[in-house]
Image (cartoon, helix red, strand yellow):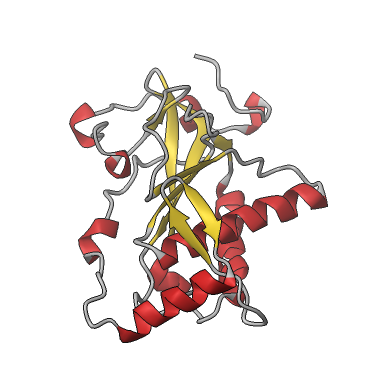
Length: 220
C-alpha cells in the first residue's frame, strides 16, 4: 500500500509502510484509554467528562493559529486537573473520526517540550512529569502504519484540595463540565475554594486510572 505520509517516499524509511502483526486482543475497543493503535477514519466514542478531542495542525506556522492551539491545550489541561483528570486526543476532530498527525521524532520531542512550556504559568505550580504525560499512538490503515499518530495527553487529577489557575498573575480557573472546559466566574471560584478548603472527604481518583498500556511500537 502507498504511504499516506506527506513526505517524499525516498526520504522515508521502509518501516513507515511496513505491515504490523496486529494482535486484536491487545487493542481493547471497548475502552478508549486501552487502545494501543487507531485505524484511519474510524469513529470513536463521544467526548465526556474525561475525554476531549481536538483537530490539530502541528505544521501550521501562522502565529494566530499557534496561539489558538496553545490556548485550547492549556484550558483542557487545567480543566482536567481541576476535576477528575482525563485524556486529550489530538488528531481527532470533534466529529470523532481519526485523522492523525504527521510527526517525525523531532516533532514528537519538541511537542513534549511545548507542553511543559504551556503549563509553566499554572498556579499552583504543577510537576509536569508527575501530572501530565504525552503518548504517541500510531494510526494504521489495513494494518499498515500511515506515518501518522494520535497524540494522547494523559492528565491526572490535581491535588483535590487546590484549584488550579492558568496564570499566577490572575485567577483564571477552568473546570471540566460534561464534555466541555468551562471558565469559572468569581462566585464559582470562591464557592469551589471554600468547598475544597473545608471538606475532609475530597474524592481522589485512584492512580491506576491513569496507567494505560503502551502503544504499538513504531519507528521513523
